[in-house]
Length: 615
Image 1 (cartoon, rainbow, N blue to C red):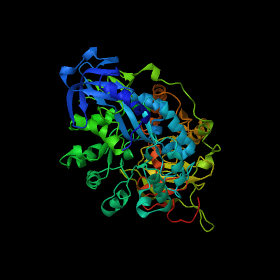
Image 2 (cartoon, one colour; image 1 turned 90 degrees about the vertical axis):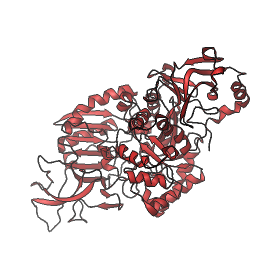
Image 3 (cartoon, rainbow, N blue to C red; image 1 turned 180 degrees about the vertical axis):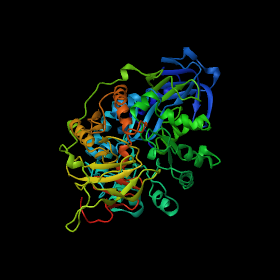
Image 4 (tube, rainbow, N blue to C red; image 1 turned 30 degrees about the vertical axis):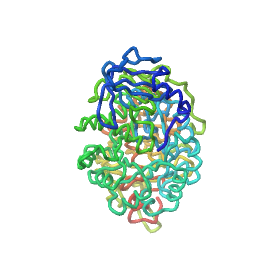
């Protein structure tokens, strides 16, 4: 087990004396009940904090001092509950489109005091410099931000090209940046590579072990010997499970499960949380399980309007589980997963990351403390926690290296060899989004007189193109169906995981407009319907705005009406396009190289009858 904020414990004698009442505490929380996530019980108590550490929790009513307690600051909980601050076991800050600083400000008011974030999104764009930016900006946040070193950059080498590449020596170098705030290796998405002993994956895992790092998982549909082959290598929590059986099997084999209960982007736009809880209920004592809660991806607007980890914990409570058990999964269990001894519980010796609740049945903090310092009260960030703004480095603000496109760059030409003549239609491999997991189907697509594909009218077809934005000139092309787009074009430089410029479109003219808008803006989101254009600028790596959460939320709200119009008025996720190039999620996606068969880890031709011809 590791202990963080070690410097605080250099004052052992002062801590000892404060615990004994010989030195006044910095903070005393009185008139409260203590939510004890160790025993899953509550009791009346008073909590004393010195130097950012809980030094004593008084449980004897005869010794309560109330407002007369000897402390520099007295906090009256007004009969409420003192609970540990919430901890997110797996999140990508970049998915909020907020800087780490602004992300911390947004989540603090909802009771989250620690996050474990895999910043592989920005590292795919900018490599080590992206990681260093996330780490340093996170330190300026009011909450603790633990940075996990990305393990798969690019996510699948050879099947896509990113802006950087992470190998074993990068892991070693980044681990040295901060021994406390860099505790682990981020989600190991290349799970086939782990099972098969792929050399680069083995090199990265060994480098992480040599640095004594926690190893985070990412897998699905693994059972039996394959699951054992993955777990035997010491990998921890997995947030990607989708079925009751997967949860049951992983827990039974001793693996950690990070239940995704607060995501703005459930896998394939499907919410598997109720299904996952069925696997949990199959065990007679859920309190003993290696189980945590996480958000994975949470939009700025959803944080501002709904919350963060409090949403995940609340969903467990609303599903009928004991509130104390739900709290333990969002606090103590997270600390245990990452082997941090002094976080996640209201107990002497722990860091004073706390929240006050009126009731345990509704996770709505009235006050939040980090290291004994009040950071939020009644849903509002305390003013002094709004640290000064520092802009991102110049290299992160100029990450889109693409020339402006023209109509011919967006046209999809049918294959034509020397012996071929113009045909009325051509067989095409089409990615079907009708189910939770995409499938590949073949179908005939009309060819126009000028030799270009012509999508069927009034049917749910669209073009998908992925432009490499790092200077390689690569372009992957696909045809998709049942994606839900009925008009116009939508483009994004938020395109998991390599974050190339991805555009889904029915209109070539609208596609030209959105692609060029993103090039002008150095990244972001863009939609064009019938010549009407709307954008959201994300200049930091093409992923992140430098606006605070409320201002970004307002910008997104102005963008959404036209965006929804492209989907026939349906309120689909703003990251829907981002998943079309996510080549670690089954079964078929498009990268900047071409159509990818995720499970077989190989490229598939757009035109099955002409596999050797270029476009």
